[in-house]
Amino acid sequence: MPAKSEQLIGSWRLQKWIITDETGAVKEPMGPKPWGLLIYAADGYMSAMLAMPEARGRFAGNDPLGGSPEEAHRAMASCHAYVGRWRIDGERVVHDVEMALWPNMVGTSQVRYYRLDGHRIVLKTPPMTRKGASGVAELTWTRVT
Image 1: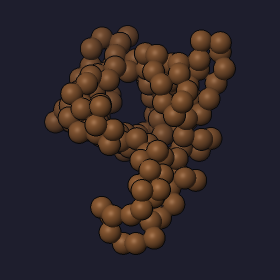
Image 2: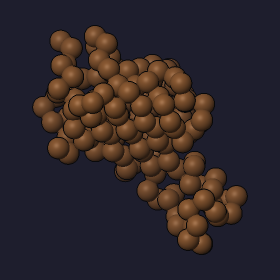
Image 3: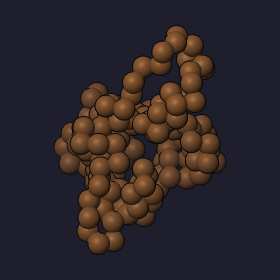
Image 4: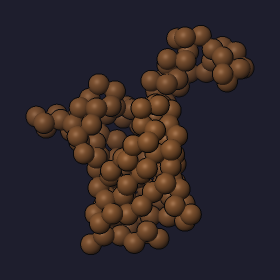
């Protein structure tokens, strides 16, 4: 049974992110303990940020728009973030991306099949590629608020 929008509203912390390929092999694109926060606001906006904590080294300098090419690459390769509008469409929640760390996501609709279980939500993607792993991603989140 599809969830009502009110059941998704709030903040969710990422617990697990796996990608299962067509052979059944499982990979963790952001490592075994990824960071992540997903926010569904009542006004119809959402925000998602996911990161690989062990790769999030600090820049040598204090300029957030500076850094060496290596620092910039490491920062982008260890983080995934986007914001936009969200809506329920039957068994799916759709994220209409307005801004993203990866520019190619802007203007896309990111479809996620959802399953609510108490204070936990599991979002499943159509086939995708992230961090070199291709297959269906499953992200498990627990409610913060």
